[in-house]
Length: 171
Image (tube, rainbow, N blue to C red):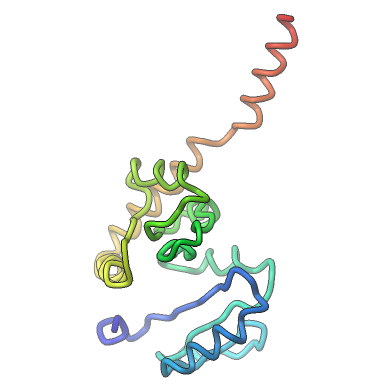
């Protein structure tokens, strides 16, 4: 539906388990899309019906780096959600669903700091993506808030080490 208004929109799906990439590709084809596995090296930039399927390990960060909007899956259904820290560190606007139990505290921190958007269903997801695509300043603002939140919360290892050393010195 978003292609009607944003014809240059492209979608990359990154299954949690790359061995599911063939199944995901079949589903995309059943919905009328041209499924392209990233490992094939094929490019179809002019084909608005192309859906790219990440089918290898270790490349997600590279794709996050070129994304304009990141929806973190496993969160519209009760799967616990996935980690939002990598796209946040890259300053990407992040959307996730209501089921982020595996990352509950992180998700709440991002929402509290207006560093991510939460959706309840596919209709809200479509509307939030439409909102972001229609206003690049919101994309920049959300991405910057996410990146700032990451920067402001770095150093936990050093703080823990300092606390342990202080405890050891005093005992």
